[in-house]
Structure formats: structure tokens, C-alpha cells
Length: 121
Image 1 (cartoon, one colour):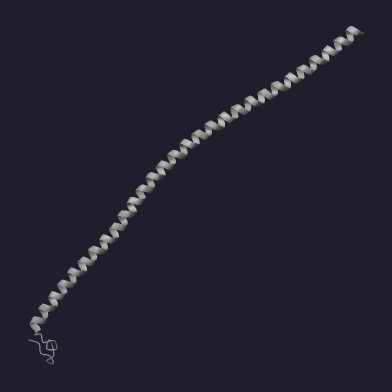
Image 2 (spheres, one colour):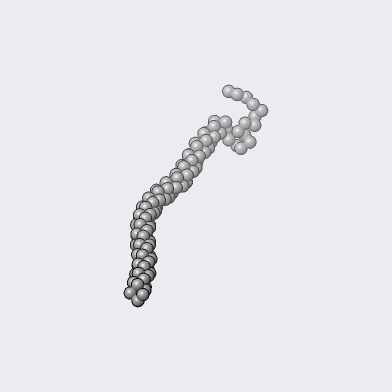
């Protein structure tokens, strides 16, 4: 047996043998409490991770949806550009035809005037 100054355990009115039991119980309680705290912390972190994972999946789904929409709009825009180019080409041809007709009209008037001059003269 270890001898001390006589104050071990006596301060609290606990004998040395019952003090060790108290310490063991306190240690077990502390470990259980620490385990519960650890579980709560893990659950808290996991719920945040789970929420982040769910948000990531939602964002990925939305990105795929937006990419699909952008591709559809790109295709539609390209079709509009092709139609616009065709329309511009047709208008240019009409303008070229109109200019050709004006030139032909002028040439016909010139020929007509020349024939009149020859016929009168």
C-alpha cells in the first residue's frame, strides 16, 4: 500500500478504492459523451456533405439541360442565318435583274431613237 500525507481521497470524503471507481465511471462517462459528440459532429459534417452532393447533382443536371437548350438555339440560329443569307442572295438577284431591266430599257429606247432618226432622216 502506498502511503501519502493522509489527504488522498480524504478531501472529498472518499476512500482511495471508491475514488478509483468514481474516476473510472467518470472516464467511461467522458468517453461515452465524447463518442456522442463525435457522432453528432460526423452527422453534422455528413449532412453538409450530403447537401453539397445533392446540390452538385442538381447543378450538373441543370448544366446538361442548359447545354441542350444552347445547342438547340445554336442550330436554330444557324438555320435563321442560312435563311437570311438565301433571302439576301435572292434580293441581290432581284436588284441585279432590276438593274439589267433598266439597262435593257435604256438600250431599247436608244435603239428606238436611233431607228426614228434613221427613218425620219
